[in-house]
Image (cartoon, rainbow, N blue to C red; front, top):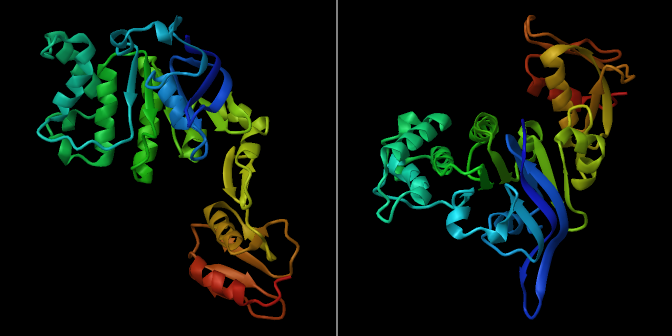
Length: 340
């Protein structure tokens, strides 16, 4: 069962300016549940980092209340907060002469004595954290030898070792290649379920957040923060309105964004399956609307993957032209002066 770990009432965030206070957002009311992955989305400069720092108690709030497990955040001591909130930042740290296990062990600092000596129980927690993240093969590696993706996993394991109910992450996929971004988001989603923790992160990876997150926070300077599941935000029009830009359109069928091409021509496609989809994509990328419903004398037979792999362009008063690749097909189509 999911419980509301964080409750926010009329929160105002910002920072002191020259002679006054700069308010970034105000009147934020929300709840964040355990066992959920929540993603914060917004343009650069909108205040995502300010919100994350405020929720983490790194920066004082301007007004309102933040309750964590029913207790207002300002009533926690620093030591108490270290057992409630763990934070994974995006900055790269040049850590040398330390193994992965030793770094993860630092997550036990809120529970160890002055010298930071790990007990048997502490070492067991570190081992469990390593296993949860799936980095047992990295346990004895030196931290400075790790890739960006490996290092990020280690920092997540360190946060798990801290045994807090809440984990905040600042753009955890920022320096990763696409496969690693997907793996990281899937890992965080799995951990939210498996550990029943509240995991909240800021990100610019819109497409991944819409496909993986349980909840989305949309933050802008006009509307403040809009909250909901990706699907609810889609149906309400919040996503299409939030990211309204020329050349971008929100696809209601897929719940994702796509490039809004400007079409100068159109052509009928005959076929199905993967070849049909890839030909359609290539043509539309080149400004040619292509599908089964277009009425044009010129048309393309895409066939399927089981045939010889060719594509056939049919044009009035001309012999059919065969292309062995989509690149060849594009050249043939573009050379056709009057498609219609």
